[in-house]
Length: 167
Image (cartoon, rainbow, N blue to C red; front, side, top):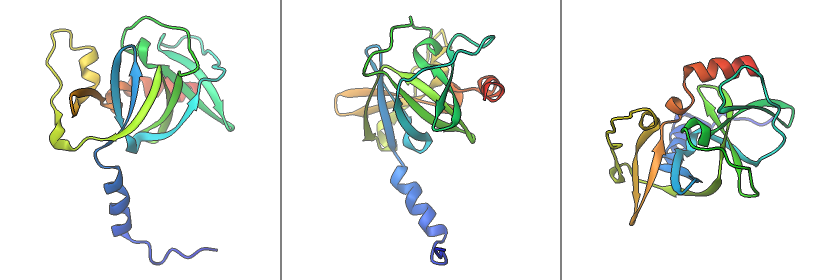
């Protein structure tokens, strides 16, 4: 067996620092979004989704990922956008939210980017408020802006309860 005597709290801080200010970016429609890399478990292609009755329309169902049942959410539908047919660029981003795995269906995964905190501004205030509640901030990279999502708000408490019932 391997020995881990030399592993200490300082090592954990180094790991956390390497993920600080790093975001996985992806596209939905014409907009680019980002999620903190610390929440990402893996990225997989779209596969057969087993529909589960009596759930919100944006909770598409579940997938079997190497023997583990993972609920999936279509982020387009969560944002109130029109559904589209899934293509070869459509991906499922598996995230961990408070110890629960859930897949997020997005149009296209782009890249991992570094956005320092000083380049993140507050989200704009809107009268609608509904989709803006999912926004953690606006990340500036050169001339472009990425909408940084608050994963805990995107997958809220009711969704986690529904997800746990599904899984």
